[in-house]
Length: 207
Image: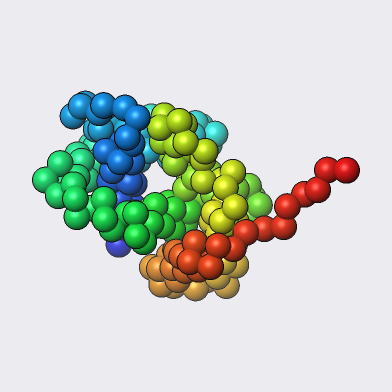
């Protein structure tokens, strides 16, 4: 098993996405959420994008089935929410911290996994984006919320930017760990700026 820097960063991304999903369940006012439903929402948020990517690539068994550390990372995120719900809810609502970190990490690692499977440049970028956003789409759908990709602020575009940067730097044989950190940071920075200044892409007008 690969216990490299990127492997542990990937586990961190899984954990923060699990936190994001679990906190979203706790924040939802219209439904009563017991322990299992909070855990399930965190779980599906954490594995949704990666599972779709693995299925698309024909990478079986999917990552969370063959690597138990992924499940431990999800469980740890769940425990943090159970023991520190007020603290984590405050961080998420003020900074979108967990969504932002999660999509940054997932984008780059998803892009790299696709690239390792011999996928072309553009498909690798798209699969990196899908890895990052699909878990959140499932989470928002379960919560009867409009998914982030359909809201005004830049979301999926930030993931594409990070994925493309990673691919460009990789083509120049840039250091892998530094490339991962820089490209994920670009996603995070774009997302934070977009939310802070309410930025979005131009709308398509239908005449």
